[in-house]
Image (tube, rainbow, N blue to C red; front, top):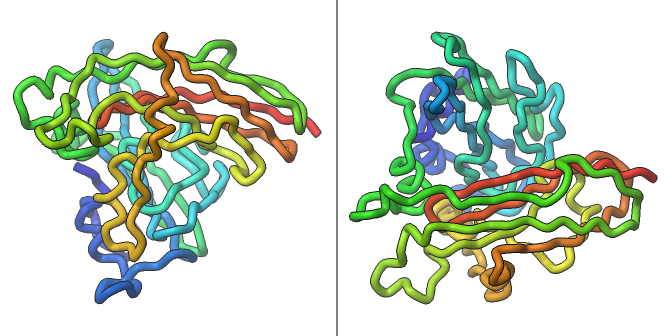
Length: 296
């Protein structure tokens, strides 16, 4: 249910699954690259809100098998109109990132469109978001795209995990000064593990912190963190020579009995960073961000 529109002589409305098989490079008869390729923005679809407004939902396709591409928000990473900043990421992990962020639009958005433009490694691509009826999203569609859930009895009743971050949404700190942040997560226990998957990470609440914006190499997390989005990375990296690593056991233990998970982040260089907390139950996810201004 992803929609990529490239107005640079390429195809229009390409589903991400189809796009993945069109990427050139070379691994075992297929063509893939580890580094040096660009990132394609993806319009996943739109969802209605109870108040009559809408959310435009975006993801991305990093064409590299290994390189995490960094494109700061600005001329090379912009969403218009009203941008360039509409909450999009500046860091793009390898291969497919699904349902990464949402941009709210008013009830009278009508036939207007949002355009996300990304330029990386010298190539520019754009995703065009509209309220076309065929692009509507619901939880079932989201779960099917995330991990193949949504078709069994009861899965449609699954709710997004609850996630809250204690304290202010923006923090100020100095280089080398530890910043401790606590988040709280809970879930309804759906989707349930399928037969034979009771000991896998296919379902169950996983939590973690990542660098959403900023120079990740300058950020150290204690304890070590795991991106919950990687729990279902196998589908998005099948054309790569390397297989995605399994979810480490310690990642499954990050959530305490009272639902809290705490991280201490230390920054080696000044700048503005955005840290993202994620709670992922295998089918649906919830995210929260904290902006950190780091002084020298």
